[in-house]
Amino acid sequence: MSESPDVLIVGGGLIGLAIAWRASGHGLRVTVIDPHPGRGASWAAAGMLAPVSEAHHGEEALIRLNMAAAEAYPDFVDELEAETEVPVGYRRCGTLMVGFDADDVRALHDVAALQGSLGLAVERLSGRACRELEPMLTPSVSGGIHVPGDHQVDNRRLVHALTVAVERRATLLRQRVTGLVVTGDRAEGVTLDDGRSLHAPTVVLAAGCWSRDLPGLPARVRPPVRPVKGQVLRLRIPIEPALFGGTIRWLVEGSPGYVVPRADGELVLGATSEERGFDTEVTADGVFQLLRGAHQVIPGISEATLTECRAGLRPGSPDNAPMLGRTAMEGLVMATGHHRNGVLLTPITARAIAALLATGEVDPVVAPFATDRFAAPAAPA
Ligand code: GLY
Image 1 (spheres, rainbow, N blue to C red):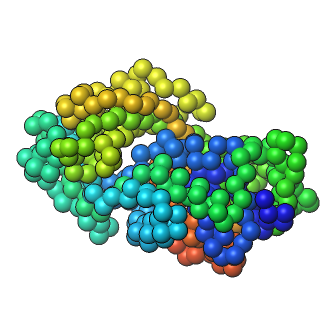
Image 2 (image 1 turned 45 degrees about the horizontal axis):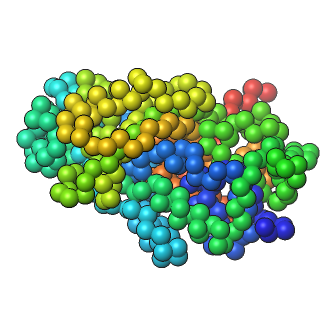
Image 3 (image 1 turned 135 degrees about the horizontal axis):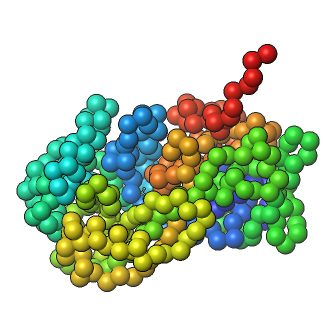
């Protein structure tokens, strides 16, 4: 471990690891601390890169950030793969969103109108055209939207690649952070569960939904993140014949779901969205809802082998967007609250936070996502 790191990063999920990788590229000495790097939300995720198919009314600033993140992906992947020789399964496969009944298709067309109004590339399709693209779909699918620019990455391979890169260039400490060290009004380091303290001029809080609860964090800089539970299944199908073209998302009587097919025959089927605190139990109802939705749209999915059932905790924020940058506490920087888009936002978060750490400059692309935007306005004098 570097004796005198410039930066300590609390949390070694994709966000913390990628910030460490990029910051070390600026010449900074970085230590990332996490008892189980990449085994939280980053491991449970499906790896959809979905700035268009996850676009929602009222979230235009977030959509712009998500689009910028998608544009940053190819270079990020090229650079990481070249450095580590770990392929991360970035597939430019597009996404098909399908509606089961007429109401579902109307809801999708409403989304398509928003997407179109923002200049995002989408194409409305009949049920027949959807089945031509994805022959595994049931003939009962009423219609859909093709989103050619929403791709995928294998998030677990990405965790592996970033871990390799960080272990080469920085320090990855597999320990639990027990508290923030504060002197006066300044963050100066962290304490660890072995009783040691580490000190650095800057601490980056990138602990996902746990970021709010770091002992020692003053209330005024506590990020309003909360855990949003997602149950996710992993299945396996033969590679030959190739049964899926790309990601398929659906609405079945108003209930959403998706399947992300990997090149190696894995299918990632998600996801519930539940407000249940830090509960990570997989429930019979969660599994049932996921399989029922998938089976209604893709009946043949019942033939797949079920290999994993898991629940992860998304770091939800009040406006579904991340909190990125300096905080009101000297020495404390934050990168949390990525909610449903953590995998997508990894490259752009890493680029912006690493530049902030190295130069003090705020990348304009993350300026709307300042960490203090939820703070209560000061009372009039
Ligand atoms: N981005 C997909 C999900 O959070 O389920």
